[in-house]
Structure formats: structure tokens, C-alpha cells
Length: 414
Image (cartoon, rainbow, N blue to C red; front, side, top):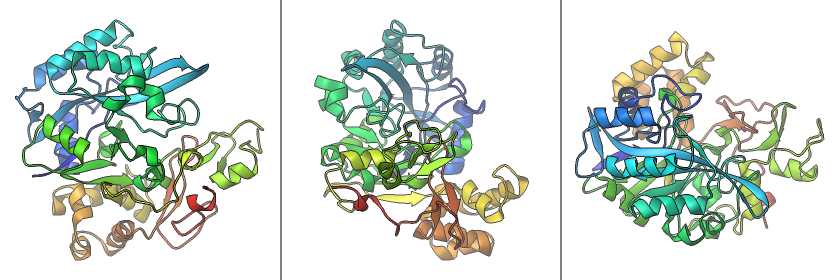
């Protein structure tokens, strides 16, 4: 059976998250998007964990059916600690196969930090010690380093990360089998590092609101649907059909820069200025593209033999909004979105459809925009220092806009 899975989201118990993000809301949003397996998010939060126990019925397969969606127990943790004379800040996603094991995780972590402070709690624990805590509870727990290139809170982040998985997890690194690419990188960028070949690349939304669900996701073709079958597919890549990916230029840390100074630089521009902001004279926030180039040992375009395929998408709300030149929350955009969803059944079906079907479902202008996105005939003003990238659908070329034919990683990697 073919399923779409989003394994990393947040709930109303995490900071800066929609109050609609609870089990019923996530189920509703997943149905509209076409997601079959939905992360619960934030199971470490005590109040939310009680809700999960009361609202979800546990099967013997590690998943929890709720209406037409299967939930998987998922939560993200923020680790802040010192290592080798530097402060490290890393976010990791953890997946649990049962409420009992999730409860044991909560009991263990509650002795280390305050789990009720945030749906994504902060712990003063190293990645290796964190892994030791979890794997001593169950070897079936999965730890997936989250949005691995984000500058401030990621395993390879330019501000507080390390250069290898082994540096972070030490003797437990052999139990790490997957990495989350994050919104600001795509598989082609990660394939430039041979050290990452042994890790399966997964993609998730990290959504804080329902309309952001599935902006990245994973597609599996499984004989049986269970926690173990999903984990095995990720580990072996058998039945792992593809990932749906953000264009990395849309991610808010793709380029370098300073948001307050309105400086948005490509890596080669930053290098020419010794990575110093020309306005405030302070070090730039080094983005994902730059960081990958610094660690890469391959040219862009190399593809490992066992790599999982991927497909670029742009959230349908964004495409309609840019076409109509109206905010995503306006009635005009929402009406067109509802019309398309009613035609196709869910959002992912739009991106799986052929062009003729798309043309029948909406206006010629919106249909053309969707097709341009599918074919990659778009441009971006890349995201930087916490600012999301800006989609350019027409043939204009505003200042700072880029497309795939412009100077790329190949121009400055060894």
C-alpha cells in the first residue's frame, strides 16, 4: 500500500503554534493534504500526553488509528550543552513504538528538565547522553537529527553544530539511521557529502500550523502498515518511494545574511567579504548552502546508487496566493484552494496529477502556475537568516532572484 507520512510536527503545546494543532486538528489537516501517517508531535508534554492516552486507541502495530489517519508517536527535543569548548545546540526527532515506551521516555527526561515548559523541551544533555537514555529504554526508539543544517539548532549547523554524526552521538552513532534534510536543503545538496551516504534522508514538515502540514513528506509503498514496517523501510530504503521536498531556496536559512541589515548573500558573495556583514560589520549568519559547500567532498550532481528519489513541491496555498497576488488567508485564495481540493480529494493528488487534469480543476492562470512548479520553471529570492524565500512565478528577474541555471555549489566547492 502506498502511504504519505509526515513524521515531525508540533502541537498547540509548543511555542508559536496554532491552537488548532491537536489530534482532531492534525487529523483534519492530514486528510486535506493526503497524509496517511501523521506524527502526533510533542508527546513529551505532560498535558498533551494525557490527551494522547485518552484519545488514541493503541493497536499492536505501533500506530494509532484516528478516523481516517494513522498517528505515530513523535516528539522533538532541544539539546543545549558544551562540547570541546563550544556550546552545541541540536534538535532531534524521536519516534516511539508504544504509549508505554513514550511514557518511559517522559519519565526519564522529566528527571533532567522541565517537560511542561514547552512542547519541544530544552534539556542540558549531550546528544550521546540523550541517545544513551533513550536506547536504554528500548532499541525500537528512533532518533532522527532534525533539520540537520539549520544554523542555530542542528547537528551540522554553522553556529552550534559538529561536522559528523559520530562527533555528536559518539558510540551511539551506529544506531542513527536517518537524517532530516530540513526545508533549506534538498537531497542533491546532501549527496555532496560521502559521509552521509549511510543515512537515509527523510523529509518532514516541522509544521506549526495545519496549512503547513506536508510541505515536506515521505512516500512509502508497504506490504503492511506498522511502526516497524515504516522504520524498516527507512533503514533499508526498500519500499521508500520518494520524498516530497521544499525547493531549498524557499527555506529560511538557505543563503547567508543578516535580517536586520537586509543583507541576503550567496555563499560566494559572503566569501568575497570574509563572511562579514557590510552594514553592521559583524559575522554573517552562515546558511545551509554555504555550510554544505564547506564540508562537501563531491561536486553537485553526484547521486549515490541507493539514494531515495525526490520531487519538488510548493504548498498549494502559496502557489494560488502568488498567482492571484493576494494573501494566503484571503477568501479568494481559500476559495480556489477548496475548489481544487474538492476536485482532487487532497493536495498531494494535485502534484501526482497530469497537466490535463490540473487544467480541468482550476483557472488557466492557477493551472499554469502549478504546472510551472511541477516542471521547475520558477525562480526564487532565496531565504536567509530566518526569512523564508520568495517565489517568483512570472518571467521577471528581480534583484536577488535565482534559478537553477545560475551560479551554484559547483562554482566554489573543491
